[in-house]
Structure formats: structure tokens, C-alpha cells
Length: 192
Picture 1 (tube, rainbow, N blue to C red):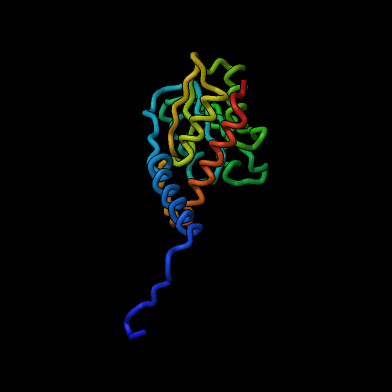
Picture 2: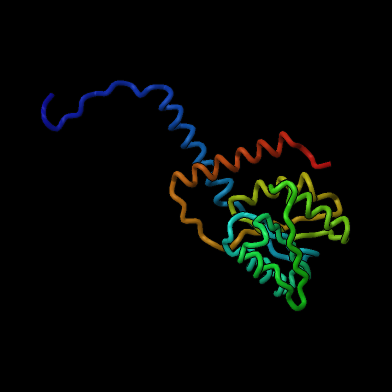
């Protein structure tokens, strides 16, 4: 072989080509569906529901919306345990806002939707704002439509105002996780 020329390695194995195609499709569709998910316009509701996840400012954002008059009550999913300093601060009493912190059962988005429905049944809530990651909004919307929304109840989906400096590998994993969550929600079906 002459210098500067690369030997022909032959055709790409089908399994590698399939994997590359799968990752491309996952990245392309995930970007459209999850990364660019559209939050709903803000409006006044009966309660703000802050979903669990990472402490990325969602608790403070939910409280800020309540302080701005979007709802008198903030329900925070608290699967973290009593020693979590962020939740201890977020769950303390506040003037003019009712803050409720509870662990969902199970500790999943579905559990959070069921917990919200129980509070709505007990308190007569007809509308809520749900706060989560932007890329989680489509799946959370689907689950809350299965377990909370009805002809008399509405859900406003809002994302935590933040950037996501993920690597390509982290985005690939995030998209796969969200797709798997959609499949799980479909298998579980309505919360009836």
C-alpha cells in the first residue's frame, strides 16, 4: 500500500449500520419531540404541581409562580426523604401560599399524577400547572392525561427555565429513557 492511502476495510457490517441508523433516528426524533417540546401558556389554576427529579430550580420556580398569583397552592412531589435540604427549605410554610409536600406512591410520574388526582378529588381542583424538565413534558402530559385530566380537569405543562448542557451520549440516553417511559405508560394504560 502506498503512503497516504487507506486500505479499503470492506462493507460496514449490517449490525453496525443498523446501530448507527437507530442512534440517528433516536437523536433526530428525540430532538424534535423532547428537546423542543412546547410548554403551555401560563394561566391561573387551582394548584401548581412540582414533579420530582433533580433539584434544578423547579421547586423555586413553582413557588415563584404561586407568588405571582398563578395558584394559591403548590403541591411538591417529595420522594427525597426528610433530610433533603432543598426540600426542607422548599416545604416550609409561606405567607399567602399553601405548600404541600408529599412522597408519591409509587415514586414515578404516574404516582405523582395519582397523588395529584387524590388531592384534586379532595379539594375540588379543576386545573393545575405541572412543572418538570422540558424533555419530560410530552411524557408527563401523556401520563397526566391518563390519570388526572378529564372533561372537567385541565393541565398546563411548564418546563423549568434552564438550559441542558448534555453531551450527545446523555441526550441519546435521555431520549431512549423517555421513549421507554411512553411504552411503559401505554402498557399500564389508564389510571381509571
